Amino acid sequence: MAYSFTNSKGKTYFLHRKQITSKTGSTRDLFFFAGDLRPEFAVEEVPAGKHVVELNSGLPVLKKTE
Image 1 (cartoon, rainbow, N blue to C red):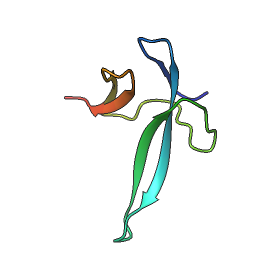
Image 2 (tube, rainbow, N blue to C red):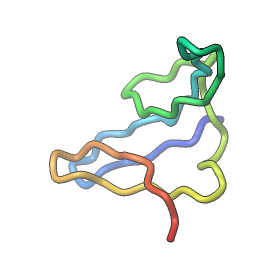
Image 3 (tube, one colour):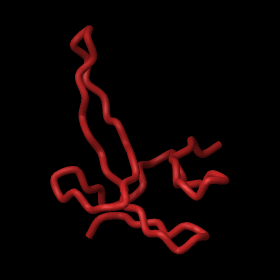
Image 4 (cartoon, helix red, strand yellow):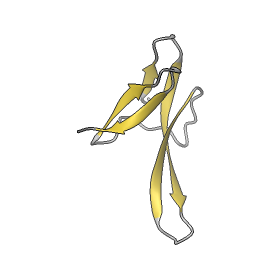
């Protein structure tokens, strides 16, 4: 089951990860929240060193843990 976050407005978002390749050829992970579940990109848990915060608009984002 994918990691889900329900914001203060009651909408549920699911955490996804997509590996992207830059122009230089290096790859990195792009984490994003979406309102629909996309099984091929779904993530089970929040990555280490990150935590979820909610913006004023209600959108969840990942931030570095300090």
